[in-house]
Length: 268
Image (cartoon, rainbow, N blue to C red):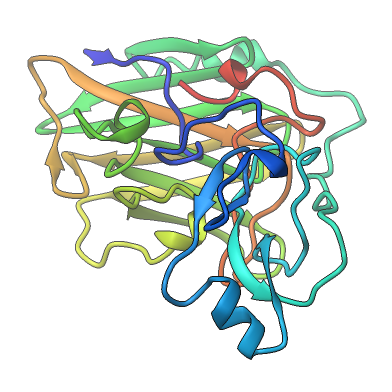
């Protein structure tokens, strides 16, 4: 049995989102990513001044955050940058006629299926002591992710979770690997290194035509063994907002659609 609550693969750590402005923060803080972030030993007014720079809230693309900017992976840095945050190129979506999505989710080779969101399904079956899973969604994704929640971890068990993640990187190509999400930071660049020991096999991701799918078979995700007779607390997410890249320190976008949209449609 697969169980879970509303959570996702890309939330703002343990930071509390509040209605703030830059003037609300203390002298040893900077307004960054909808929160007042405290300076540290390497990024503070004095250290940055010796470098001829200022403390600024920055993206990994070298752009400056403002309070009008939305969700993302922003942190204080010493910088002289002046360019503000601009959106990444969105994932190109199909425009022609599509085949039957219903036929895809009715795949008779899987004995169980669950609707995760309006246009996203999980199909699975038990194969010996393993589970074969197939995640299916309409449209072309930047990435798909599915894994085991870290019970008691931050963001409803997202931080510290073990996940199988398929990346649709236009430069590198499609890759599927296991990852362990950082215990406190949620941006992909902080946990981008795949796990070296893996039980996952028969991996395949397709992101062409009108649909995206990710298939794999395993008895464990990371170090978390799957319970074949009881309950597993799982999480999932996907993004159509942008394609991931290994450039700029490694990037995968927030779990959302091409033009944003209700987060519940892209994670759970």
